[in-house]
Image 1 (tube, rainbow, N blue to C red):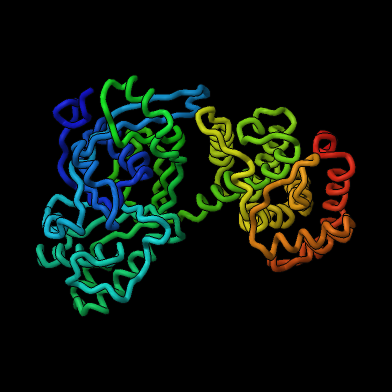
Image 2: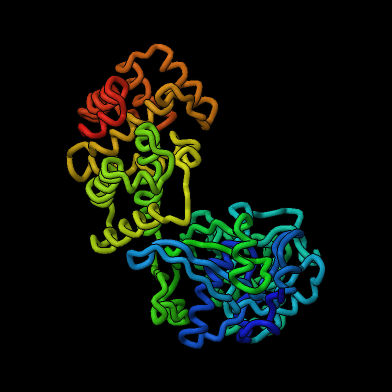
Length: 476
């Protein structure tokens, strides 16, 4: 069977305009797919040079395939379950800076280069005091990038039109601002001069971003079937869901250079990404966290089955549209569209998410993902969000560690597990509710101070423990 490469596949060649730190599954299923779409639909002509950010990676395999790979997108699209695939050809070549450091720095001399994209894991944007300018390469990603930018600054004499638009995709808050801060720290450490610092500040644009697409990655268990269907061997097949969202915070000029809108891509350009981050955390993550103890104690094991169930699905839909969305500040149409997209994602037949697997650290998740909606609902409506607080009661019942005689494999911080084990040893519902709600270590606030909240949660937990989740939820 033939190998996938540019001799065996119909692939385009593009001008190298993007340097990308990271060659893993996420960027190839997310950013590179979008670049591919813009190249194909509106002649963006943006080729990618992929740089391996750590000593071990996939660059050798990527180069063997001339940067080509097959992407499968599986999920709900326009109301239907769809699996589709295509060969992505925007990556022109890959470089391992640990083996070819000169080739890496030579990319900085490319006058056509305009963008930097990265995904080096949450730990990637970090300062390493041991990094030096003439290391080949530096240990940290920001160290490598600083040396790269300094080389570019020197090559073009600090020309203002040779700065880059930097779009990091690491999953940390204010990723662009944090990256810039570390680069300026290295500039100071390495005495790179005021002119370089001014060039970084004035002629390079550091964007904060929010990225959203589930990427299961390489479908190892299905590769024999996939290879037979494709008719060629591809060692870099990657799977992603249909949904995608890329929020890029920066000046209007960034939008003018990235033709996403003309391609129908879900890329949002904004001067403030915070409302979009809040929307994702409260609707997507908050719904997940609210669903887990309710669906699991109801007797369901998977997210998709929970949404498809009339009772559990009805519960989480009402929680989203009636109690979470009203706490957010984006236009109602945008919120409803995102919420419906979330429900489609939960129903994705190609992804099986076990409720128990996303129950990890549920107490801290409730605090960050759900509690802000609870408090904001109380503030705006002067009422209690019944379903979100039912979920909190369900969380307390979940941490009893028993589902109809079956032990629940609880996973959380040991202090949280010890707390609930101690509370449930008494089996006193009123005491459990009071102790849990007043635990400021959990919530950062004493929840018993809100009028009627303790009584409501007590009634919910009493119903769950005495009648069982199925009856309690149906009565709700």
